[in-house]
Structure formats: C-alpha cells, structure tokens
Length: 434
Image 1 (cartoon, rainbow, N blue to C red):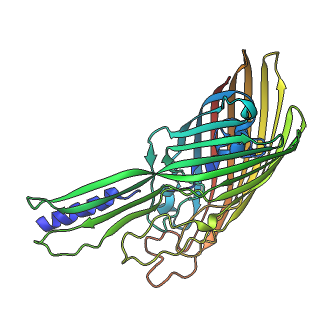
Image 2: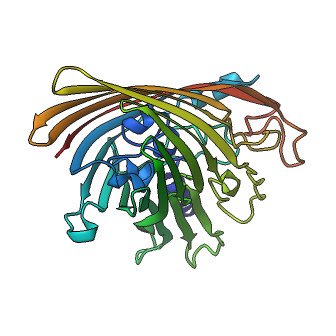
Image 3: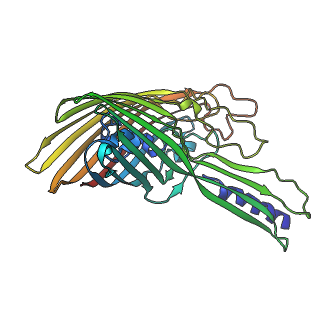
C-alpha cells in the first residue's frame, strides 16, 4: 500500500509539472503597437516612434523630440476542425483569447556638435494582462494550431538605438528579450521514509537581435531593410526519481522540455513612396526561416518512439499598407490606415503522425490615428486598429499508420483531418510627444 502511494505521488508530480499550446509570438502574429498592425506590418520603410524597436530600429531617429505611449492589444480565435471524429475533437476548438499591455518610449539623445539630433533610443514592453509567463503544450500529435494559435503569454522586452548617419541613411540595432523556464524536480524518500519532492526552477532571459536600415535617396522615397534573429521561450525541466532501498525499482529519468513559443529568423525589404505630404504607400516582402522549427515538446523518456520531424518550410509574406492624413481644424489631424498581407503556411501536408492545423492566411487591417496639438511642441496621439485573419479550409488524408499506431489510438488525426479559422485582433494606444 505504501508502494502504491509512492507511485501515485510520483505520477502526480509528473502530471502537474507538465506544461499543458505553444506558438508563434504575439508580435509575429498580429504586430506590435497600434500603427504597425493597422498597416498589416507595412511599417519598415516608414518606421517611426517606439514601435520601431520591432519594425525597424533605424526609424527611431525619424521625427523630433521624444514620446511616451501606453497601449492595449487583444486577439480572439475561432477554430473549426473537420474530421469524422468531430465529437472527440470538439474541446480542441476552444482556443483561449490573448491580451496584453504595450508600454514604450523613444527619446532623442541631447548630444551636441556633429551628433546633435543624430542618435535616438527606444524601449518597448509587452505585458500579458493575466500572468507574466504561461504556456500550454499538449502531448505530441494532438491536433492544434501552432503558427496561428493562442500565443504563449510571456513578458517581452525590446530596446533599440537608431543613428541618423547621413542625409539619406539611417541605421538601427536592437534586442528582443523573452523569458524561458529552466529547473529540475527530484523525487526521493525523506528522513522518515516518506516520498517527497524538491523543485527548483528559474526564469532565464533569451535574447534575439534586430538590425535595420532606412535608405532615403529622395524625400518622397524610402527603402527599409530589417533582420530579426530567431527567438523562442524554451523550457527544460528534468525529473529524477528514487524510491529508496526498500523498493529497488529503477525509475527512468523524465524530461519536460521543448519550445513554449518560436519566432523564426526573419528578413524583410520594403519600399515606401510619398506622392504627397499627407499620403504614403508602403509595400514589401518578409522572409521567415520556418525550416528551423523544432519539435514543440520533446519525448518524456528515451523509451518513447522518436517523433517525426516537423519539416516546416520557409515562407515569403508579401504585404502592402497605405496611410493618409488630413487636418481637422487648426490643432487636430487624423490618419486613416489600411493594409493587406498574404501569409502562406509553413506547415507541410500532415499525412503522417503530426496534426498541425495551420493554413494559408489572408490578412486585412484598418486603423485610425488622431493627433492633438497641446502647444509648446507637445502633442497627444490616439491610435486604434482592427485586424482580421482568414485561414481557408484545408484537409489532409493520412497515410497508413506505422505498426505501433492504430487508427483507434489516441492520435486523433486518423483517418483524415482538416481545419479553418478566423483570427481577430484589435488594439488602441495613447501617447504624448514632447
């Protein structure tokens, strides 16, 4: 009876220590701030303000003075899974909404001489509204949205520096910081022979670099280039168990490990055109290095058959954004914004054991900004946006399963599975320029 209680306790430690969906980061999915998402991410060639720390840090030197901004972003998901086993899959259609606060500022450094108004810095935070760090990962082969799913809720930090090198060249360099979880769990008998556990864990910073250029050969033209390093929140929690001399039963070492989210390496080139002082158009293409996508959840023990490789593919995302402004009275201006992007899915045909449900997406966005002159070179700025992602229906028939996989087992993707989805994001920000 004591032995049974020990095994139950060990099982509970493993169960309750398991992260229970992991996905691309919120910024990669919807964007950062309120202006950039309203333009569907077309904010590289005409980057400006604190949002530049993500879109193109070279844009930190655009404009004058400094600003402080507070904003809010939220995302909703409507997933429909198609399968002859729809009753078993119904609960997986519930994808948890996400929301968080954006906080940022940018400032021109008060330097003199040749460096006057040439260098600026910016900082941006994303803070989830409910928890500072949370991730859920279902067991391997569970049907799920990965690229477009409910994102990991994790505090993120970004900072950058911009340099106005010449009249036609601006440079920028920044860093993104995410939190990852590392630790260990040791289960062993205590002094009285009762089974106990010792848990150690710590949050460790993960860094990714951002670099950008803005080339402006003419006052009406701008070419933006940006490169973002791969970044992801990892977790690594090995579990060791010793039942003691009384029960000489070896327990294999367990591992809770994988990626809680993953943003691939990216590179973009955008071209911006201002036909008039109040109208600007930007279009470009973004490359994403999805072929380095790892297994989200590693096997818990070496005895489990190896998982198939995800085999994601690199993608190219074309996008376009337009922004036009006009005066409303002597002290007020408004900006109307819109954008479109097409994001092909990096997920291959899911004819094997994996069941990643992501598909190609059409993305449309709209937004509105208001600027109020407060006098003494101060302005109050309000921005809102809405963004809709339409993921078309896709269906995959499975090949004959391996010998150790039966259609009647827990792999819910057999004999065929498909999905379609709508994603909606909206946000608002208020800022002061001075």
